Length: 241
Ligand SMILES: O=C[C@H](O)[C@H](O)[C@H](O)COP(=O)(O)O
Image 1 (spheres, helix red, strand yellow):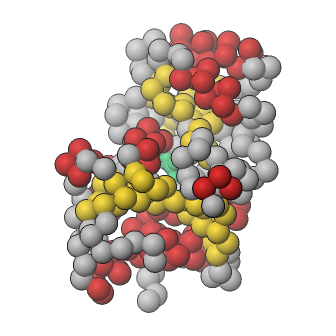
Image 2: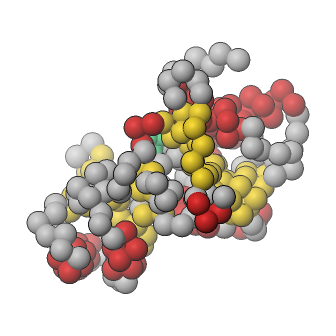
């Protein structure tokens, strides 16, 4: 079916393939971002056509609003308890299916939802597939209180990992600091390349003012990569294949 709101063929191909993974009655996590939004549209079409029930939890206010407007039933994650499957986009996907997420500042709720799911599947276009994470600025959600001290601690952590002189940028929207759905700030780390994502994740998680970083390590089990001709390539994590 043609949907005028869906203009990106690659993202649409991935979204359609992911919709086919959804089974009636599933408890489903809905991701955030432009690719996830296409998935939500395609999912709503299928639910309307086939008329089955789903229980959905959203990873952001924006996704909850979109899904609700399209007729999907969205509940609090805690009302559902646990999810069978979460479908979400990503900013980078490496060969081990480790991810950078948070380009839309939703990575905190996204990680909570993904890790409260039996399976997380990523949908993306080919531009998101990288040999090594880090070209995309790594989002780090921080508490507003003392955020500059938190930034100093992040800088010191980067120095310890020999990621020196890497800019740490306060994300803004319309000239004001961006606030996440939780009211926090986002620092974007311009790292160029991340040699040891596990070590970086551990360092960031140890800082008191850091709420969550956008490294999703060993969480995603399948990435569906959409191509402009409408085909998809599936990448699986080797230890789960
Ligand atoms: O915070 C936003 C999310 O992590 C998105 O899933 C990610 O930024 C990818 O978004 P898009 O599909 O728009 O590229």
